[in-house]
Length: 183
Image (cartoon, rainbow, N blue to C red; front, side, top):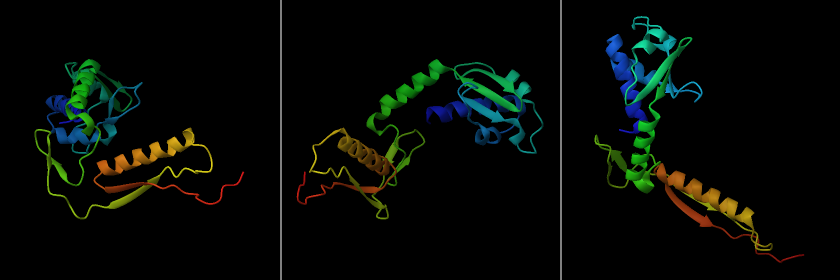
């Protein structure tokens, strides 16, 4: 389980201990907020109608600091929650080191996730979209400069993003303007 999902699940479970509801009530509503307000926010007015009315203040009083939660506070109709930064950062860095160069890539069309968080290869799908990324195209009539490098970097980033989404990507560096050189 990814670190953010783990922390959201933990917050939901703590709220469930007080309210008696399933984590499914709180999980979809926990969302990011401005960093000055906290790491997560829970909009109390969006709780389902069948949920007994709780104020943000009541929920904040029952959300206890621990390894995952640093604290919480009520702000109007919102419950704002701070993560334990040391634990959160430690877990994120461990994930990054564990995943290596695959970190940040979503599951592509030819992988699926196991319950233990590992990714398992499955046979290639033939219906993956094929994408052509053309980049650089320097004008050979002028000296090569940093502007040419910029478009090459952008093209490379785009092709990496498309590959990570499961596309079949073909890249080409097209050299244009082979005409007569004037000037």
